[in-house]
Image 1 (cartoon, protein in one colour):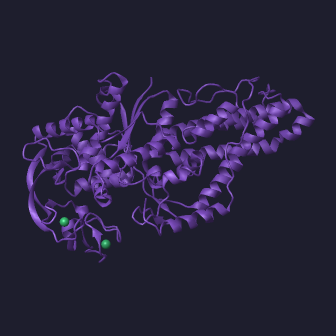
Image 2 (cartoon, protein in one colour; image 1 turned 60 degrees about the vertical axis):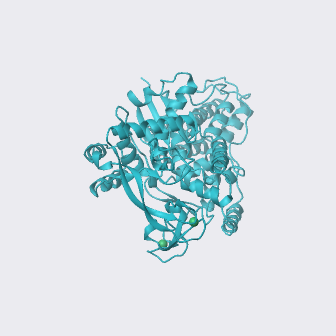
Image 3 (cartoon, protein in one colour; image 1 turned 180 degrees about the horizontal axis):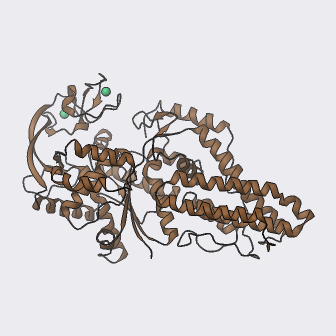
Length: 560
Ligand SMILES: [Zn+2]
Ligand SMILES: [Zn+2]
């Protein structure tokens, strides 16, 4: 029986380009998982989109002197291009600026209001007399109360990394005009999270799929006491508040962006020509996975589930496999300091599979991990080129040369052959279990260990000599190696879709890879090979130093 798997990947903010931290944090794991499930023959719906609203986009627009939509359009297009180049396949990648999204958000807001989960209350916020407007936190700057850094943003200090409220800053000023703002009272709506504590707590405690850090962090928030959270703001960019008297306010971006998972499912259904098709994914047995970075945990284990409970009759997340952070050359990624590898730039110079490989084998699944150029070059050369690519290349070229470009008929398998193929079966079973459990790093490590066993077997049998001395023995060796690389192709597929498809064709298959074919199939004797070419390119060791120098030069310029 195929399973139904819903995959939500976090929605990137359309206020700047994507860097490798985003890719490793949530986009790549979501794609690996989706590819695995599609290959298993499960029904997959994977959605995400660009988060167009909120102050980061509005502020960037103010700084550039353009409309916020211009900024949102610019980055949305770049994101779509990056997915394409990286080989990330969404069933729908949309944006929060659609009419459909606004309609779904309005519906959720009004239903929660009607059911008493949203209440109205006054709060104080900075108001700039000169600009005649309230200032969201990011529009206020001042001195950080924790570290004393100047020109610190009102929501977070870039110097010490601490989150802030604008009213904690000393000597606050308006970022738009430099004037001194004053605190004023303003009326807003709040989501009454406290109402859901009793239901969220046992749900989180009883979910043994959650990683320990996800569970501990979420329970910690509940134990500290959930409070009402404002869900509207005094800005002009965003989805209007559907209540009279609130025309000048908008729905807070954190509240509406998570609704994107639902609105995207509905948009996908409409595009399928069956507007009700989304229901299967939200109302009937489905496992819903949300791939996010750890900064998004509270939104996916507390806030979104609370909204779903309040709305009623919609499925809660099955798992929230949040990743920790990726650092870059042992420093945190920083957009403002331009300490980042921009996905667009990287994909214009390197193939996607080596990038996917290095980010997966070192994925920050259970703790922060570091991306370094030295490591990138080393893993590309030693692991992809020398271990995997070379094995494929040698097996195929020796076979093609000596057996007329076809898979040779094997003789009876000896102990070495049986042991290797049994190990492939065991690895396959283990990798399957690990992929299903979102342990991508471990799975990839196991596939690479099997690759090394393949090399060991190949070198021990030395088929380049066997073909001269004992051709039937060479046929057995090479057939065994072909079965092995065929199995590797399948196991590597969720991680390295481009090279797996290439190898699939080289082995002489003319079918598409990755749709219901998860399993160890045999390459039939007599099958003619396709065109044989190298799967990966070796990189000069000097590339690492050049790239670090490039990064350091980039950090002296302002971010794109
Ligand atoms: Zn600070
Ligand atoms: Zn001002």
